[in-house]
Length: 118
Length: 188
Image (cartoon, rainbow over all chains, first blue to last red; front, side, top):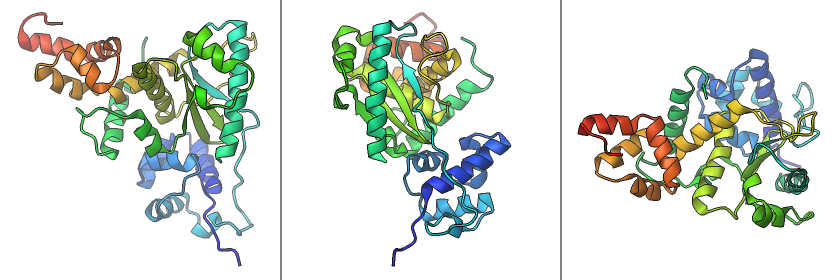
């Protein structure tokens, strides 16, 4: 029998949904929940939270922990994927067409890698 | 550049918090890779991506100024790619800048706008510059080292940044002005 596991993506999605509905930042959410903001950043990267962080966050959400274990089916928030990779870029403000083409190739290669790392 | 109200204080606070989480003093040099690791952010050098056309040679040799670093979003996860053809100090600054975007929760944007030009957000870029700089050269850390008699070149070398960035940080945070008032004369 497969053991239940924490579904971090669903937890992040649920937190994000409440956060956006209230118009607050992740940092403010962390303060309200009593967790380290860096923990939320790690979770967005797919890393598992520690037990105390998980407990604090489900308490903040007012949702039972079981909602975020794989295998639970009803009422689970679905992670919303981005259809297209979008970016934050540091570089020249004005880019030549050749540079933009190279950048497009770079983004495709990087996006492919980001999928492999998941 | 006019920053939003309270931003600079917020950025300095975030920078200090991150250092504390890593067990670093304000006078310690910051390893940007350690910060990225702490946040779960993968950092990939340009040379580490699988070839896909000539983009690596283009950004490494032909036009290195046009690409410093980029954060790729896939769902909520970020991946940072940086130009490892740049000077090591500049790489620190580039990576710190992207980490700055992450810590400030800047939303991602399309690469190009409707006109086919690079999408650019002045406020986001300025804020990431500021927080990146604050991570690398904390205000009170720079002040402490300067009071010990270190000059800008020594402080810059210690923190692993360029003299230009170090001078900018110490000037913008009022450290230089404070030291000159303290010494009663122009020093820098």
